[in-house]
Image (cartoon, rainbow, N blue to C red):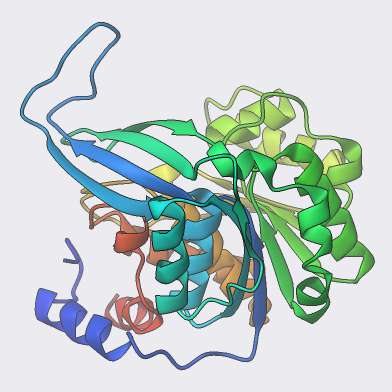
Length: 332
């Protein structure tokens, strides 16, 4: 249900039904990343250390930053190929089936015979805020040798989208290979890196889109206001990335292209669950860029998609279809 928008629940259901059979664009998006199963508890509050909170509601949902972004791209009209590694277990088999249902090319979904599929435990409070702990499992064994097997897919891609829930050596290898082949590489540096991103990686990135915490980690600049957000973006740009987009939650996003700074406001909505909103933004951003939109317009498109996603529960289950995002724009 779309909350605080001019799109009725009936309209949303209609467009979701109509767009389950999607008209694809000609753009080829390659997503390289993680696949998890999310185990979610919605409760009044997120437990503090040593605290037990009763009265929650439990459900499972396919997730993982890579998978979320792949599904977001597919639902928004991209021809998507996904490179990931799952376990040889029920969660891995379910993920494979889910990707196929979303019309994602699964030729490079590898199976690990030793490690289990990744799992994320997620708490969501009554305000839609969340706390997440991830057991990476098979995601940790997606290696450069696996990426090499997807070289043909990189050749065909218009844009390559990567995150940080797989080994850093694989992220660096994929970015380098894609850049050498003349591809646009978009990095969503999530979760926040525990070690500094290498100059070798950053020079191969066309665009990076961290949130505030990730931007602070990468730049070393504590973001407290507009000026410090701009300073962080400029610092990241100086590190080698041509274009920087820092997402600022409900406040929108900051865009810096090496010359100009632009703040792009968010959409006013009542959030139900913010899980997967950043992944929705990244997937939508990738689609809009691949279609030749300006970075400003790409951010506006991504803001609309992410705004819709937070009005629904779950990660992949909350991701909107293209017609929903388009009708949202039409009705604003």
